[in-house]
Image (cartoon, rainbow, N blue to C red; front, side, top):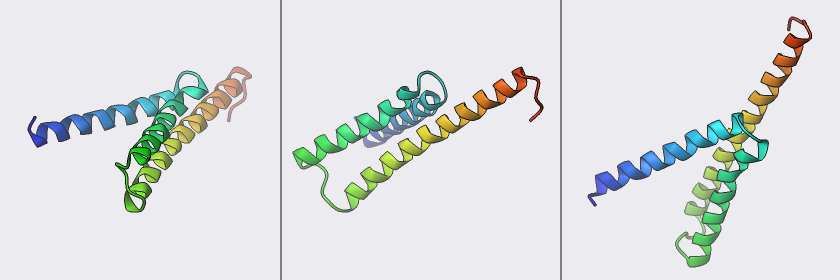
Length: 96
């Protein structure tokens, strides 16, 4: 496989996971948004155990990826809470 095709597939996979993470944080059960961060931690631990990730800069990048996924999940939860609060106040006839 040519390197550009591999890079394109990796980019597509990363964007797909981020998009699904965004949707999972906003729709469905609350725990669904934690699936991607949990898989990320598992992958990082497995790569550390096999020696494919060095301690240092690559570990910082892995931690940044986890922070990004948790941030997306947190924003989804806040959006869900705002939508729920806005829907209940509209149902009660309150203008907020």
